[in-house]
Amino acid sequence: MMMRRRRLFWQIFPAFLLVSALTLAAAGAFMLKAVTSFHIEQVRDDLEARARLLVPQARGWILDGQLAEMDGQIGPLAARTGTRITIVDADGRVLAESDATAALMESHADRDEVREALAGGVGRSIRSSDTVQAGLVYVAVAIEGDAGAPLGVVRTALPLTDVHAQLATLRRALTATGLAAVLLGALLSWWIARRLSRP
Image (cartoon, rainbow, N blue to C red; front, side):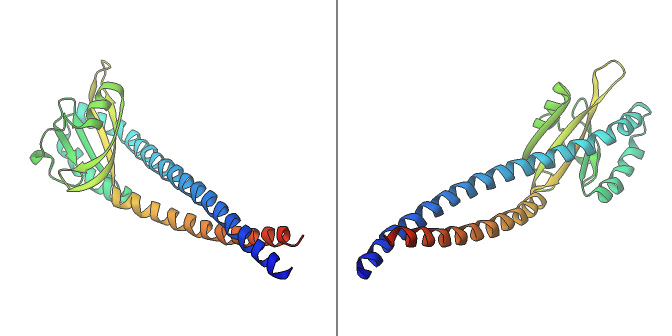
């Protein structure tokens, strides 16, 4: 009788353990994907908010023709906020840039985020930068002129390395939670299998 009960236990327990492990793995993968998408969206919203804060000042600089002052102010501002900042006119000419010399930069008229911002007010993209040779998350916000036509855009960006570092912290927390859930599932499977094998 004891041998039969043990055989039944070892037939039930692995099945319960496998089902619980697969369920937890599927739930963990879904949660990780959802958290990653949510975090990137939060980064984009934050970059848009930073760009919008700079739009009125950039508009004043452009209308007053203070391009040299604008280029000089962008670097310290970017350093304080930890954000790459670029100001581009409506033709795609870089007027100010925090990480490079604006006068030496090529036209940004073909950049996706710049084109979208000039056409619809806000543009977003994730791609590699030719200037800094790294992947970045970009958000551009249009600078409206007096006649309604955009004077240019303020573009903010963060390196993907920073975003990935933040995501790695979240993944570690999710992994620890998942392992704890697997352990709990194993204990629960053992208890259920033991209860079912007794009769």
